[in-house]
Image 1 (cartoon, rainbow, N blue to C red):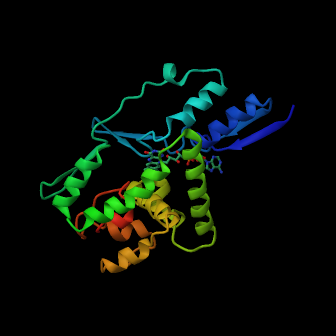
Image 2 (image 1 turned 60 degrees about the vertical axis):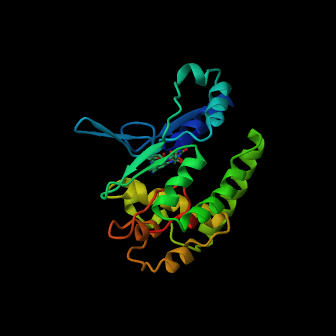
Length: 235
Ligand SMILES: Cc1cc2nc3c(=O)[nH]c(=O)nc-3n(C[C@H](O)[C@H](O)[C@H](O)COP(=O)(O)OP(=O)(O)OC[C@H]3O[C@@H](n4cnc5c(N)ncnc54)[C@H](O)[C@@H]3O)c2cc1C
């Protein structure tokens, strides 16, 4: 029997291990932490729960396929609930921003908070909407093509990425937000946008090696977190 070792019991490692096992391999999964899940973690403090990783399941079919391949039913194993809004951000001045699946409501809020950003947000959201629509195969192919372009950018060393930021992995002091911005940064580059120029045009100086930190410093103007990719954001 072919023996396989998977290093890391995050979603990727676990899915790989399951597929290898289904292919008849003798699989061993090595995990440095004391529990599986990788970035899928939650911190509980003072009666509150803080997600340190993913909160939104954007492509349930990936999980459905994995469960089906393993002879299990995703629907029977996991209860999914649509959330509205996805999240609510409260700013110190009392402004409330709600991200939901209603483009009309999101745009209306952006219009109130930062009118210049409304058309830019709409323009940036357009390619994302194209990427995320169509048949399952189209979505996968689109995402794969974009991810490959992003990976090439990273490999070519064309820009700072989350690897520079220890907070990314440890999820401390803004690391979670930093990561989201790294993702936004990556995707925006893959979409042919120029996030560096957007930061420069906004007159923000680089203060940290990680791009996201620059625009998320609380001293800067209000900010609406991704998935409004950087072209739509004003720091
Ligand atoms: C704040 C945040 C929000 C996110 N939000 C979303 C979301 O809403 N929707 C979504 O789809 N995705 C989201 N993501 C992305 C998603 O969490 C990741 O894509 C996914 O969890 C990555 O899985 P992975 O298995 O590739 O890596 P990881 O989850 O990082 O797993 C890697 C595992 O390998 C282990 N490991 C590493 N090196 C070693 C070693 N040498 N020896 C042993 N073990 C090792 C690590 O301890 C870890 O358990 C978010 C991520 C973050 C951080």
